[in-house]
Image (tube, rainbow, N blue to C red; front, side, top):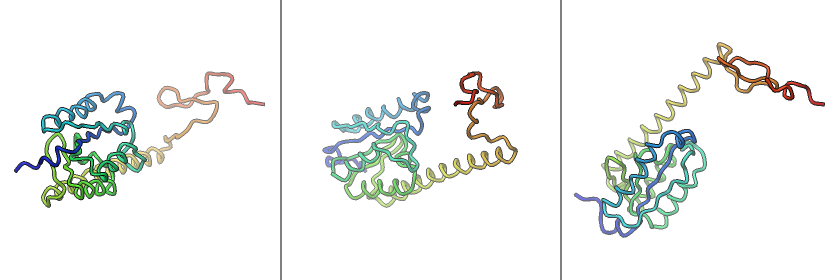
Length: 191
């Protein structure tokens, strides 16, 4: 059964591109290449009108404002989108609220979700179940990462090694040791 219909192809395909941190944007170029490569996948599947939404490069998916994601949801609500492409469907949203909103909007307007591996129709029960599980797993990965990071900070604090900010007049030196700032102007008291 081919899930892509003429109705889907008559509307725009949106390729949603995101990386969570500025460091990833700068150093993980292969991920960007793979994501931008979804334009070719959309063309190969029959779409002519393809919009790349990459406004959220360097913006975390967890709890921050994402203008690109908001633009994607507006386009879906307007009935302009036949399919949303992402390298992994579950990476479209990194919290349950955004994920289920996206699934519901796609279901209502009849838009497909397509990633590098598969094609999903959120109106179909089995696809919706699979997308729901992928979203839950993605959300658990994020929660697990946060818990590990928090536990590491607590451990560091318990042994007295956690320094959030260095006092004025000091800098972190080798091995995270605090040293006087080499700039004499910074060390001297201001009048």
